[in-house]
Image (cartoon, rainbow, N blue to C red; front, side, top):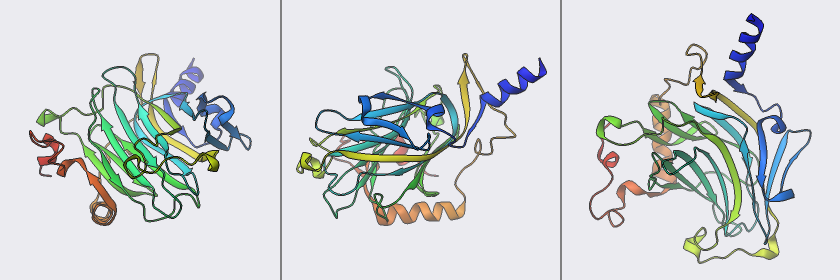
Length: 277
């Protein structure tokens, strides 16, 4: 009995180190456009003029630090979107969202981020990158705990969304979420507001994934289990040097922030935009 309990605890306190995409994920749409290759060490998603493709995690996570190394569509990727996000299901779903919006050759990708809580989003921030995300793999992270959500690229924070429930602002914490990714055509809006369309002569378009890692609590059998002494991310927040790097990104690479878009919110900006830290 003790051995069974130990094994169950080891399952519930999930520490996935990217041993195999076969174990951690399943291709959910796109037929053979999504592939797990190299003995489970790489996953590719492909878009052509007939369909995109996508995958989801086998486990549901309820707080944690999620890392994935991704190499995005190279060359003329205009019109394509590679999405990478945590999400629950239903009308009141929660979601923590990266979307990588392609561009014409030589022009920068746009990293679009959003946070949904209780089914409501409209919290977009967008960034350009300080590197070419198509030349090599880079690590895209989501740290999600009861106090904050931190988006980070190669351990450099680009966005923080704090829990401000005391102000009446919903925060994603009630629902466990699976990790999803997909590639699809969105040329009606994705590149330069839809002005640049997908060049299908460049298809197929592919994004590649490796080295998935999750230090996370796992939802299993109706309960979420994690051990507080083994999950040091549960109370983590940005320290002084991390705040400096976040401010560097915001100053030099942020291109859209819903919190200063007065035209979009003529009745007043969302409450969190006026919060003083």
